[in-house]
Length: 203
Image (cartoon, rainbow, N blue to C red; front, top):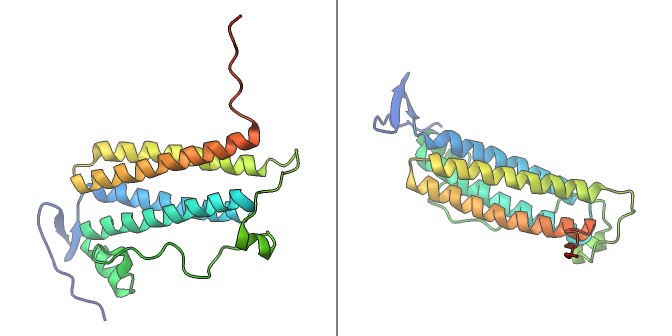
C-alpha cells in the first residue's frame, strides 16, 4: 500500500498538482551521474566477458567501483527527492537511501558470463598474448579510457556548478576515483601497444 506523501513546500520543494516535487538544482546533475554510472557498469561487464586473465579482472574491478558510485549517487538523489526515496523504500531498496550502510561489492558466487574456461575464472592467470590482428583488447581499453575522461569532465563541471556543498563533495569524490581508473586503463593500454614511444635524444 502506498504511503501518504508529505507535501513539503520550501526552498527546494514546490507543490505541483498535489505532489511534493523537489526543485533542487543538483538533482538533474545527480541523475545524469547515475545514468553514466549504469552505462559504465554495463560496458565493463560486457568487456570482462570478452577477455581473460588480468584484463578481465581489471574490467571487473572497475565495474565494482562504478556499482559503488551508483549507490552513492542514488543516496544523494534520495536525500534530495523524498518522492524518489519513498518509491525506493517501497520496493525494498533501502540500500539506496542514506540511512543504510554500503552493501558488499559483489553478491557471493555471482560472476558475469565469460568465454574463458571455468578454471581461468577462478584463478585469473596472466592474459595470454592476443593474435597480432586482434585489436579487441585495445578497442575495449580505448573505450574505457575515453569514457572515464568524459566522466571526469562531467563531474568537474557539475562540481563547479553545484550550489550544494554535499553534492560538490560527492562529484569531487567520483571525479577523483575516475582518475584512478584513467591511470589503470592507460597502463594496461601501454602494455599492449608498447607506448609511450622512446624519447629522442638531442644530437
